[in-house]
Length: 442
Image (cartoon, rainbow, N blue to C red; front, side, top):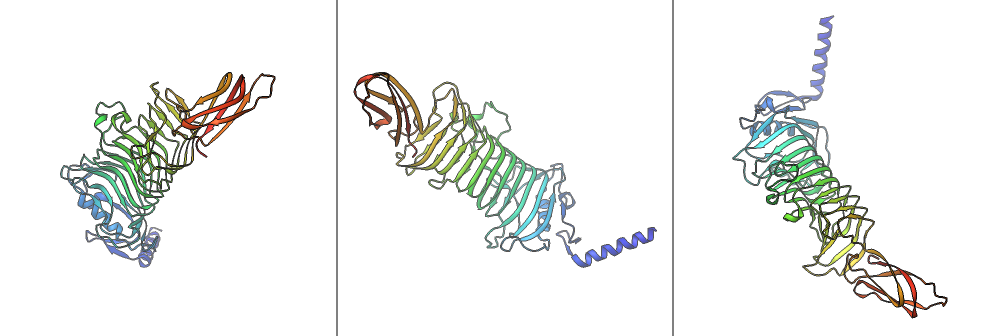
């Protein structure tokens, strides 16, 4: 019986290898094309972090990238069939960026361990660099590469992960710390997904005495159609920088550097082409700045510690902006929840801007729709909306209800809306209550 089992096994082995063939790895070993899991320790990487493992890790990646593959993904990108680079739960010292030697590869996973930059790691480099050492002139460098379950310690030498001109990259469950430039930089390409991850220049949990000295950027999206979901940025001067369109940010907690110390949670730097949604997020003493926002939404988010939203005028454009259903909690200093930065000139093109249905505690509620009741006896009723409306001297529509107990049927009319003040006048003096709604956004 055992002889038959051995014969069947050998027959299966020869059949598989006859079909799939084999290749030689970078160490000169004959490897089956079915062997798609590459353990960096098998290449000599030191999981204790005492010896430089850069060459060993790059050799394992090189062998994975040189698999024959099984067809193509996008525009000449070889499908590596789910090849895996396994760090085996070790902690590895690296002295230069882990950079792919070739482009045009996809369907690859690097996972399961820690990398720390050594003291000779080049300043400004990225620990994992998805920009090819030898560009292949493709539309996209890589597709469907997953970086998962990794801790990256930049040792204050540079950045964590760089993704350049690539498609459908997944960064999942990563912890990136001690960076001086950018934790995760996405440049060009599109559809990079960053989720379930933690980023901080310094390892802290809030209330850090050195918070005012935090530098660097947690994440930068310099491209379109990317998503950040369920991510915490706990220390950096800037949490997220966005300079691209059609990005979505959801369930993000920014407590990187307080606004009072010059920090910003999210900064949108593409004037007039924002097209970004920020939803279900938490801004903890640090807020949002958007330059000339166009098609920009902030909703169902929580702003704590006097955190607020700034609309910054570059060319004076604010179009299709929706800031609704958020919570703001402050210290009672009367800070506006939505503010304007018009140092480069006033907003002149304001269309479809809706700031409404937000609730506040200890801050000043600002809106594009404001309501007031004016009571008294006279022939003029004035409502000053300057403390409530977002934009100065801009009221586009007024609705009002005029109620009086006077037996006469009074004539009344809207007389003026300049300076964000609404004036209602009657033909003759009488006691009345006037309920007024002023709208800026239509």
